[in-house]
Length: 261
Image 1 (spheres, rainbow, N blue to C red):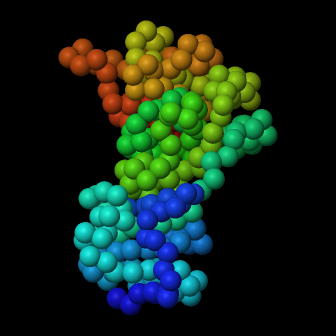
Image 2: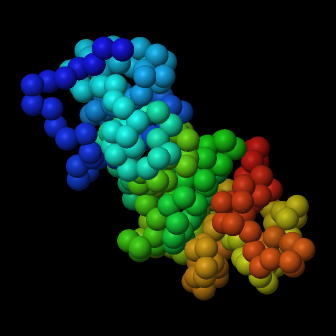
């Protein structure tokens, strides 16, 4: 596999404002959606035989692509879980949700998953993969800067899911929930205990347009829980306290958002 090697090549490691995508699924998904975001590409010999078209496009754009050894690829990825390929890309911008955006969601009858303070980037990536798999178009992140962000680890676990989900941000999740309800949709909150509904039941009247999940330890904040139309507690055997939040997300999406036209 040929490689593009300029006289003064920049560091393969990501700089500020750059993101590492690991694994062929994630790299191909980003390439299909936004090839212009690629800054540099590194891969092992086996993977290099699968990405000829991608390399040709990068060559035309005068972007770096290079076959490297396993140790070097691990260093670039910052992980042993690189899947044979690492792309250094410009990350997508996460935009704030506005009243106009909410009105647009209402007009199209869109569905959304809202996340409050998810703390673990691997959980965020697993949730995004589920959201993409089940076809929920919008995902909203809420919480302070300590909450998980769409970083390298989240993208690695998501397996390309970020490229199929529109990601938004809000500083006022209870306010956003009230806007969604005022625009004609029900918003269901996942509660670790004390939920008023059980899975399989749906609130009467308007369709469910959003589901909310909270932090892995604390769950939903009191203000967010109070803003929801209803709260659901997933019943279990009682042998363990709760589900992983990514599994809870899958169950809630299936019950309330999947194919809910």
